[in-house]
Length: 379
Image (cartoon, rainbow, N blue to C red):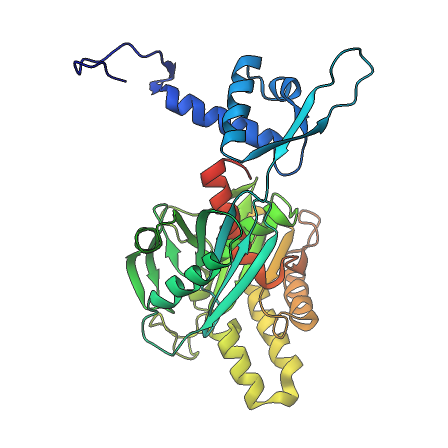
């Protein structure tokens, strides 16, 4: 804040460690604290919010008033009370006040998108077919987002994109061989073209986050995304493990058969060449009578690859996300049996392998959850 002469006026601030917390930071944190107390569907009085969050009653009233003005909270109903006097008015999240877009780039030959409310409930969905290309152009993604925006009954809070490949914290796709992308700042490109704040995450990480946030998945699990490629999202104590160079979970390009077929990454016999959707669909078309054996073999290869990380970090829940034509009982049982045959002991409990509760929306819903976390501080 400055006075009319341009000289700095005194600003009250709070120091946390060596960092100075400005009033704008405090306001933002207070807003997020209140939203977390109410998200997704709790209704509390202002006094109860203050008690729950530890904020003062004055601060709580100010924050609630701001959030009501921004249409993120709404008043409704009264708190039951046996005491005399006017009952306390309840406030809750106005989950239809804004929409979130989630885009999934993991599927072969298509880009898929959903539009949700602030609770992750799908309002609309759309997809666009992709022409074969060495490099995925951005135009189909932009067109799909514009199509979803035209169906939105409320303003767009943000856009989340789940993509194959290695993605850093700024939303730059460092490498995505199957999409032909290298060092593409996808978040910045889409934010600029669409005018909507965009967040980009790896598709498997996104599926893991979505499973945790919207399907009450466990705090420790591995989610394997089987699509045009194969990747894993690793969740430990509620935190996505990204690794030193953002490549944690990139199991698709680990060589499992040195004499195997060439992979898009330039190596031979990567896990992706045995378990990805295009590979398996091609094999089934060529030999439909051996469909179950093909899927069982893919499950065994995936289970063998997962055995070491399962033992290393003591994960007992494995979620497999992918089309039901591939990720069926045959494959799931083969993955589970292979892992347990290799690692089960008196030290390691049996591992449970199951499909994602969110189905084919897992990665897209995870990207929605990413927007909600960054923009509102919930989830």
